Image (tube, rainbow, N blue to C red; front, side):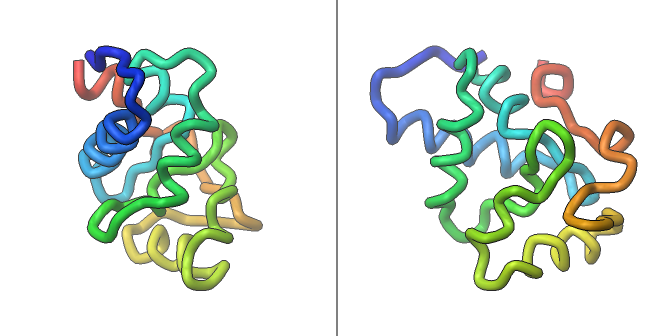
Length: 112
């Protein structure tokens, strides 16, 4: 379990480590990552971390709590996030992951 740090940079690095563990073909939410890291109401903080995400971190696998591709505008083009998910077998219709509950990867369960 993540131990809270007052250092924002350490939190961001922890977010990236969790995101790197999301399997291909699965998605998780900003809130699920925040919950796993022990930060209540930290979904926005995770979003900020994802905004500055380094290469090699599969940011396309992180969506909002309803499965919407809310981070798509932070990629090179608005279609990049959806295209990457489709290549992994994730179906997206109107910017929403189809079968979100089935494809949802919960770090609190999977990394326990």
